[in-house]
Image 1 (tube, rainbow, N blue to C red):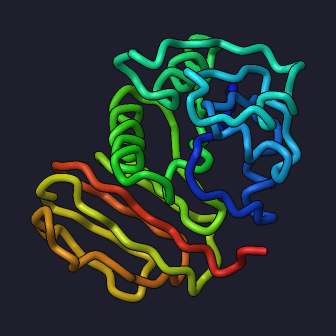
Image 2: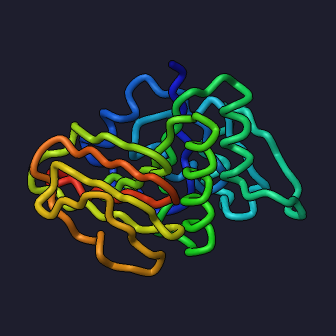
Length: 211
């Protein structure tokens, strides 16, 4: 398995859990995502972007990191380009660090990336250190989150026959339409297993331990 972390320009809180998740990962920064490198104690092997959101001080701080420079007039985000480069370098597992908490359009795009990657067979999730997002298109198991953590399932389409166990309010083969809040703010009570007959969703985890 080749694990890559993509540093994006959203919110990052460098928790112990996040640092543990990054152990052994190769790192690529997407434009202003490089600002998280110091706090996370990582040095990316590549810096990708058009550099329109990286100020002069940030660029001067990492002269040793190779850059892949793109035009501002491109048809992909810096994050998308960084993900593509990680996959070109053999990534089999992706962590999108700082994929939320910035611009909403980019956050939603990153959520779409997760679902698309899952459909291609690529393991991926997104984290700020305080909030983790996992794609759900068929099934998902989560067994490394403490009891009492909050968990939400946010439909990205109509969901058919959704089953969730290991939570305070389980469901069995329940249809959940897009726009429903039925599956928000559940509570982890043990290993979580989720099964979905049809549709796509994001599973959001808020770990109880954030230090």
